[in-house]
Image (tube, rainbow, N blue to C red):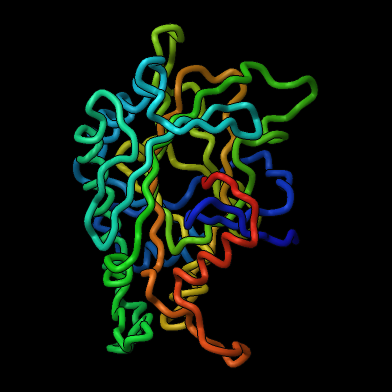
Length: 334
């Protein structure tokens, strides 16, 4: 098995494998639970694979379509995309991004905007925030009575998953992926050069809205359903799990990060699997792949749970995050 290492920028860290392993030719889907999701349905998938899709989220389909169309327009317009951060990924795909944060439950304005995007993207942000709260609420039976999940140096405790999420920072990204490599290299498979290699997030949890391909005028004629989403999770047996396309428009996909095991698992019942995932942009895809996700982080003042092997005083999440970032070269989050 490959060893994972942390890479990241700022506090948005993720653990990446040393190299992308060969992916199976066949594909199954990430298990889906209808909203409101039952604990059993969620745990069956989270314990086995570390990821689950919650479908039928009220209002999501319309908010997703509206937000992604606007996001793609911002990214394709030469005059307005200057406010977006751009990174060229390993396969030549250009990723153009708007970022935001939700801090202690309060959404902050977008860092960079165009064409009134800030206000127009608010419905999607609010729906995913609500879905994330419902998801964590459904996992409440994992909590062990009245004991705090996390504590602080002042003696304050975070007693529930919802309190942890409310007390921590949530990093939000609106990405558009614009393929620059229009044809595969000779004798190359679709997974030889992924946009984002197989990795696990260092946060607690990633909540994402499945991507949507949006055409630009120069791409017509265009079939929005022709390119695949490109996102995949490596299941417990090494199988490739993709998002089920029929339920994708109304689904929020939750992906467990390494931080869940490091910060929460010691105080919870059961064990959730951190899910390795990757992104491969289909060769020849046209238009823009629009995507939104938010990563939930522990509260900055929360102390890392100690073990018998730990020496000295445990660090807070803010201290640990600063240390972890100092160990790696800057990179861009998934």
